[in-house]
Figure 1 (tube, rainbow, N blue to C red):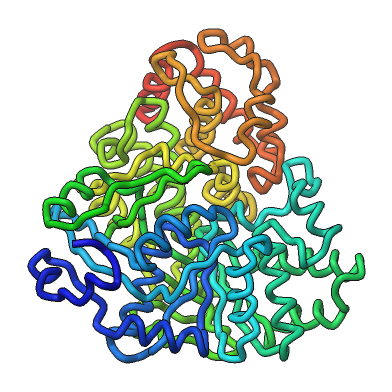
Figure 2 (figure 1 turned 90 degrees about the vertical axis):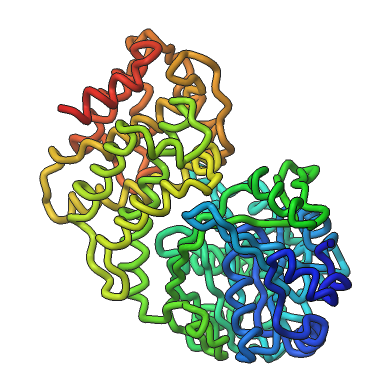
Length: 537
């Protein structure tokens, strides 16, 4: 059996393979979506395929909606062509249960998948049509936090952004300029209301998205490309809203063991691929069962009834508290600490790290002792129960193939939130920083990781990061086994508020992080020794 529209007719065959199929007419749904689209989503990767698209499938299955999602990607043309186009826009979704069983489902809620680049004329024309449609209620995003960034570490515009601001909407190439150009098209075709919803895993995600789009709109107005009334329309939340959200679901790279299980069930064509741009993609996506999505209920043109699929809709303050709970305390800081130390200590699976007493001690202290005291209970989810689930069920899940190397990607874009917000809370509440041990140890571990040498002294590949070259240049000259070579090289990083949200050298943490870092570069085995020494003291 193959994952395509024709194969869906063999319901009995798929049932024998233990695969759940869409409970609606996929082709009819696509026709209705083409006529009156409701939802466009940017970022057609794993979190979208395993979570967001499945939410809409639940509504379609229950007869609570008759339209799907238009998926779009501004970055990797081949991801759209190979994974969506090659499988009739269907996805094999696999849920990895803690008992090492899997649930299999074909997700058909994506009506079409498009390349969101003006140069791809046919696809872009389809997007322009969707954005002009009065029926469109929501445009959402899972493009990662770096997708919203317009500037480099020194504050200057990224080259692509700088060119887009000069060239105007018709020649946009950056994700944010492309979206702003599409919003301008909607403005030109009736000015109908719309919700523009970031579902990315970062603090104040709606604010980041809104800030980037408004900055582009202001620049285009100054350069004569758009009228001032377009900026005013974007700034009016009764017309264009930017709801905040909190999302949580771990979606690791497709696992070989999952591919094998699918093939043994008689499902063909499941082998992963690498696109020409280096993106690792597969016809299936595997993810944990646990999932949370909390969204500010601000939708000026209406919205799908996603609460029927388990989404929490609430006010901005509650979203903010829930997001802070998860991103700054109960999951993300723990993940980042495990990522950098896992790489340094030679681990390739997060679940194996959860058998390491030193690493478990590190993240237990980071979450329970240092983070929870400054987290406000959001009311809809319990912080203590959330972190208990993370520690006892999610991270140790024996069937989760998640790798520290994946989690370590883009760490420079994450540390300001995952660690910086807790630091800000301690400063704002005038709390003693003496009890902060695991947090500065995690930051020191990241700096040690950036040297590209593991704890045995061997060269270690580093995960992608937009600031990787700049950060490594600042650390150039530091040698393992020679702490004296460090000098004052950490200061430009630790003092940079664009990275950590504040100047860490202005508080006791700067010296503490530096001290831990110096311990960790004393020689081979020093990372492990430092963990034991610091956490057992």
